[in-house]
Length: 101
Image (cartoon, rainbow, N blue to C red; front, side, top):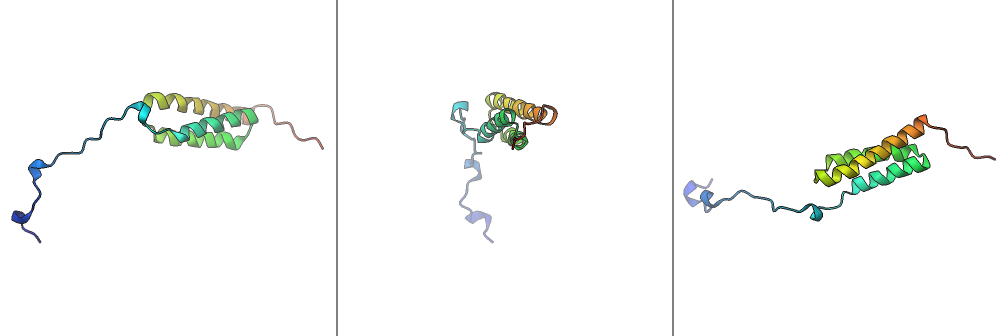
């Protein structure tokens, strides 16, 4: 073991790390939120249950990784509304027309 006298580090010169401020425009794109909106719209327009459920999963992922609450919340809320609207129309709406043979 080394003794205290041979330690070259100086505790008085140590400074805590401070992350540099990042503007909201420089933050990376929230891909999960974008994918949630796309799946939500596909679930509503084409009546795909899987797309609506995937939109809900991607909404949860986007909420978990939210960095900018002001901008991301609008996109996530829109995706949540599309996914819930898709689930309601899929499960409680009129059935999809079947193929005629």
